[in-house]
Amino acid sequence: MGAYFSDDTINQSKELTRQWEEEVRRSLAQSHDQKSRWSTVSDQEIKRLYTPEDIKDIDFARDIGVPGEFPFLRGNQPTGYRGRYWTFRMFSGMGSAADTNARWHMLLQNGQTGLSTAFDFPTLMGYDTDSPKARGECGKCGVAIDTLDDFLTLVDKIPLDKVTTSMTINPSASVLWAMYCAAADIKGVPLSKIGGTIQNDMLKEFIAQKTFMCPPEPSVRLISDTIEFGTKYVPKWNTISISGYHIREAGSTAVQELAFTLRDGIEYVEDVIRRKKLDVDEFAPRLSFFFNAHIDFFEEICKMRAARRIWAHVMKERFHAKNPRSWWMRFHTQTAGCSLTAQQPYNNVVRTAIEALAGVLGGTQSLHTNSLDEVLALPTEHAVQIALRTQQIIAEETGVANTIDPLGGSYFIESLTNKMEEEAWKYIEQIDNMGGMISAIDKGFPQMEIADAAYRFQQQLESGEKIMVGVNKYVTDEEQPIPILQIDEKVEKEQLERLKAVKRRRDSRAVKRDLEEIRKACKTGENVMPYCIQAVKDMATLQEVCDVYREVFGEYRDPGLF
Image 1 (tube, rainbow, N blue to C red):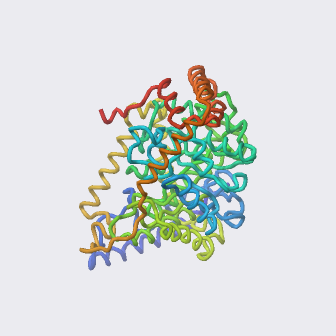
Image 2 (cartoon, helix red, strand yellow):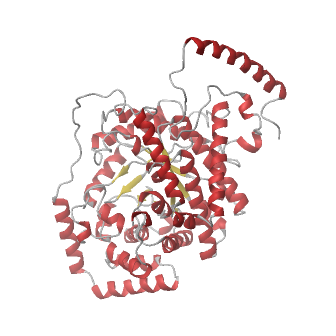
Image 3 (cartoon, one colour):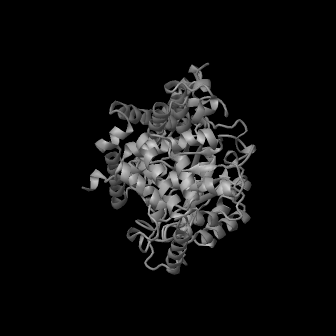
């Protein structure tokens, strides 16, 4: 192994840079820069110029390497996107299960290669449509799922052994996944053949998104149950998508998203090893991650490259994983919802394209592009088709898939990647010293770090230091409204009728017995998944199972709100 540059190259760089700096000083004496300080959207200060001197300590073999080899900075696959493109996976869910099923078929016909499910708020929180807490929310921000009957409608004519499905669900993830497994069984598809992802990441809920049900400790225990069950019986399923996306949406910096996400991942690995006594190589290859592709193009690329290198070192050196697949960080990317604006919404097409390109150049395995109208409502078919075509144009027309990690070796990219990795390690070590992520959450540490970052960014927006086009610069007085998707109120009425019909025809004694089995498993520490699958097959509702969780484990209240 050797240094990236020779001493002669470094010395030559220093001399040329010195001469250039003199020229810059003469230029600035006549005309000042547009800004006194230049920084990323996360407020990482950026130098005017990067040279070999900025990456003089890099060792190519140790720090950069080649695709498909440790430390995977340049990607997990040796052939990159030449072997296959990333999965085109548009986030979709609205109204009834039948409505969402129709949208899925439209997207598949238009070239989408993976499904992704958004659930309505009651479903996310573990409540049925007939709960007083669910009134008026049915189908509004995603699809309403109360029972296996709904789920079978959702996956009607979807080949579960050929199409992978992602489900963005957290507190009630075990129940929705039980429905997916039960639906596959009913359709004659073995569990060993189904593939997909449940988000199932509760730590980031406590940190950022705030959709929670039970306290952190039992929430992590349920996640370990799903990981153990998937490892044994559903080997193609990613039983968790460790998510930085919502941490970033809550206002974090890119470094905070990187550090808190990876430290969450460490917490889950530790819990499965401790609680389930599994060897790390048994389950680590199926762990997956989920990152935000924000608007600062180069910062996002560097974040994703750094994430792979950090995780490879964590798995190899901290957990002593021996299988190279355990060292891989596989991740999905979504363009930044928080970067979209209600003002001049067609600008969002441009933002999404730039963010998607960053995700691709960062080496994502799966990508969701936001629709231009998502800041206002669930996306229309027209808007979602534009978002899907954005990915297809990047893949098929731009040439960015022709070579792997095309920005690798750039003085700026490698320097910023190193800087972000270094700062992320500091956060990880700080949380380690607190006793882990659950302890850090109890102390309010990641929550306050994110709140402070969000406040700083808002101040920069209001002062004009940071620009959002159409919001604090290039503002227009009058804007034409765009068509948005409306969820008909009859969706709730029809959903209530379906739920009532299921409850009327099911065997209530079987449901009662199933719920008691889940209750026992919760108390004894036995894996809940087999009992959940049987319960949903007998038409136990989502809320009935989640109510057992709430009864046994208690309900969590955010200490920051009281």
